[in-house]
Image (cartoon, rainbow, N blue to C red):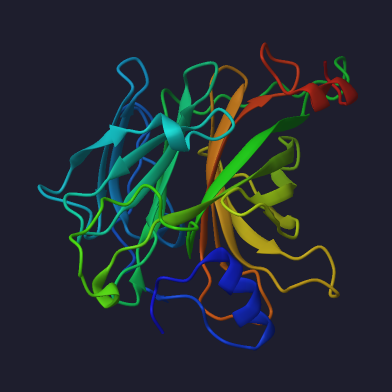
Amino acid sequence: MDARVTIAALLLLAACGGNPFPTDGTDGGTDGGTDGGTDSVAVPEALAASVSAAAYDASKDELKLAVTLDSSPKMVTYKRYKKLDLAGYKAFKMQEDPLDRMFVALTAQSKDGKTRAVTAADGGQFSHYYGGGYYERDGNFDRPPVTSADKGTGLVSYAGKYVALQNLDAPGNPDVLPVPVGTDPAILPSQPARVRGDIFLNADFTDNAINGKIYNRVIVDGRIALNDVILVPTEITDQGTFEGETAAVNQNQDQISGSYGGIFGGKDSSSVAGLVHLDQFLDDADLEEEHGVFVLTQCGQKGDAAICDAVEPK
């Protein structure tokens, strides 16, 4: 099946049991991730996928990535592309010429400057698609204090915006470089659709557990609502990292499978950065993919989300 499918066609094809998605071209790129040279932390293969290296300099607004089939040399500088910014995440673009793949990257750095993450993907070409991500922190893992004197010090929350890219092309592929008149549509690249939503995490540093939910999830390019995603409880490691599975809210919704993971950074783990990779979220379609990213401030810290007014500690 050809990779160039509009969002409008997605729902029609899904209802007919068709496959509007290109096959996944990820080859499990090399693990990456360091926390400023103090601890070496690997991004899980399922989340890194086709992204083998990344470097984001927030002070220069510069992003360098190594993604399968994006450009050469291996690490290339992506072009800042404000038109595709989403909810506090900065967008970047890479497409060497009109018949090369068109990659979009979405990235952010935490308000404390200690954690950052990026997700990148193309919209598909030649019935294959590439995507993945990267996260890192500066400094070591600093576990929040757990004492009986301070209410809730070991159980903290993180909240903010979630954004993602899907192997579903944006309507009209508006940001793909124009091709010469008469070019055969069979070889055209596509632009990945963008997703935004909200995310809320509860982390228990007493029991070393984390869980959460992604909600208000919608495809921006087409305004199509999507189901919520449960971030199944999983372990917080001694290195301040976590990796777990995703799930649907209930059995009456489209089945959702995939994984999530991330890393805590800053004083008392004041921020967290991570990735989500969904490999199923529509019952009537196959091979759908979503690569998401989140960079969040701990509730009670300066610049936290409005929902944090309802949680302890404040």
